[in-house]
Image (cartoon, rainbow, N blue to C red; front, top):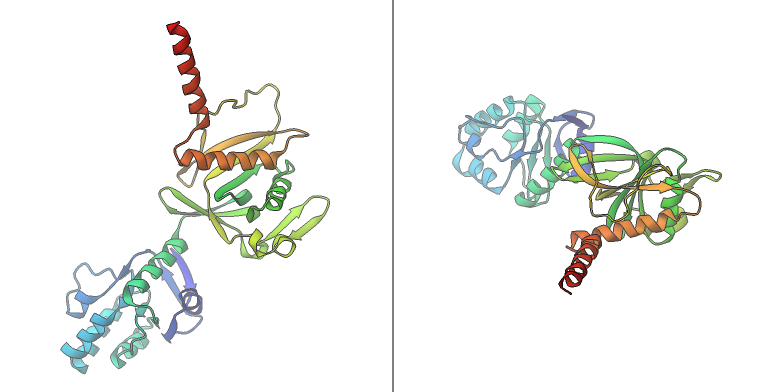
Length: 310
């Protein structure tokens, strides 16, 4: 469940407010919408009253052509007696006077959009899915590296921001530094963004706060990015066995979504930005069906088979 003020909702979807105080609060509990065609005929069984109601050209035509003023008043007041979050009119249609009065009487926000009904439905659902998506905040850095969403994690002081800065110098783009807000939009997709108050800013120890967009231009930053891989930095441990071949895919879980994870040990002289870039490009190859480790494994097995036949 999420809440927005009428003005915030109208601004987000570029809607004209016909009824509703700008500071009135709208409560959203579902990402679905409803077109109340059946309800306008008087059938309220299974009415999805917890959804935003979208009234299109067909509904308005029915109200004008099949109902007189008294009937419109009766059916619209019955509709607005339910706790509907809001009502949206598509195609910049003129709102019937009875609809305006019913919304005012029961304090239901009424909006108007220039979009055709199908596009209004789609844009509203997309907005609600983002608004209502499960979300958490993680400590890390999120970048777009060669089209791959890479989230750098690890303890403070290991060089996440410095690695990110080097990647930005190489032409890649920053999404968030230090604080990453993560939302799950579907069963297998996570979207990361930065809190608005610190968006595009980065902390570099010894220098302080820098504005990446001001330093490198708008092409060096992104508002949001799907997270494809996690790169975890950790201090080098000589007793630990690190991945050498890459035959086994290690994973981690965020908000119920499984993501590949690569553990990069940090020690002096190691170019973490270059290794991170290689990891991102290698993942793109894997998504296209090519796995270098499996290819090498296949070639070695083929050579062993040839030797065995001699």
